[in-house]
Length: 390
Image (cartoon, rainbow, N blue to C red; front, side, top):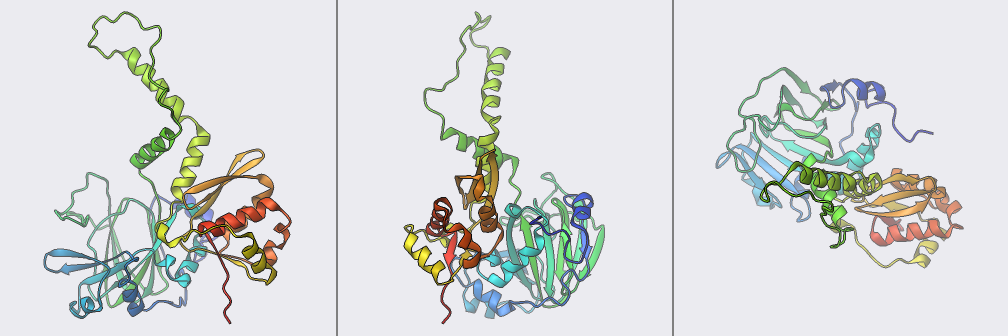
């Protein structure tokens, strides 16, 4: 049975989207979420921006400087002094603080869940914008309130000219190719590198579902750092059988070939690469939201005895990988553990469900390794005990 979603919001077959649009070209889906009930008001979004642990920004097109950037956390007085037009509030990772926002991500399970970054929500006063720019990742832009005009421009790269700005990457040249006005329920997909320029027609809110895409520099840097943890000081460059050098000061081709073989031997370790990648892609955005504690088998057993389930921490990132024929690897918020393949159904449940009911877990209670896994995830804070609402 497939755990993936097979159609996009709006009805397009997922395989058609992946073949023709994903990382290739934009796609406008009218009424992708018809009748969308926005669970978050503009005032509630502004309230989040007052919190210390929430990452937020305000962009004013005509502030103290052109495209002035202000960083949160903000105070209520900050909003009283804003102009009536041409400013935007952006709040990152709202899905980690508002469960109703996190529910939206279920509709995007036609893509690997470990690729999801966060749901950023922006509120814009009339005329509000963050300027023409491009992103290095895929994004779905869902209009949830008001109307926003999206202008689509050229394909960009690192050489595309930018305005001189200390904080924002705003394009100095924008070559418009298309234009759409999105109403509540409409959604626009944009591939990486495509210039776009969103301008609020009226008071509006836009939800941006972004996807993680590590740069090549990150892959090389972080993977080699991971490998270096397991290399001893005795493992060094060697050149046994060295030929008499024509010039002792020359670094010859044979030397470079030895180094190349050394590096290739290290990076061709597929198991190490897979382990690093799983850990890297599940690193939590806000690790402080995961409260670690001592494992408590009795507490878990008592909760299940009273029909309380387990809730996935909204800050936890989870994924799994088949390691060998008889083992699989579970990645949980930047860490990993090796498990027998018989636990695969449980691992899939943990990775794909926001709530694990006591009834779902009943069959695993007689398996010591399964219970130990649940205890460890509770102790790490990736899973939480369901609370009594009474």
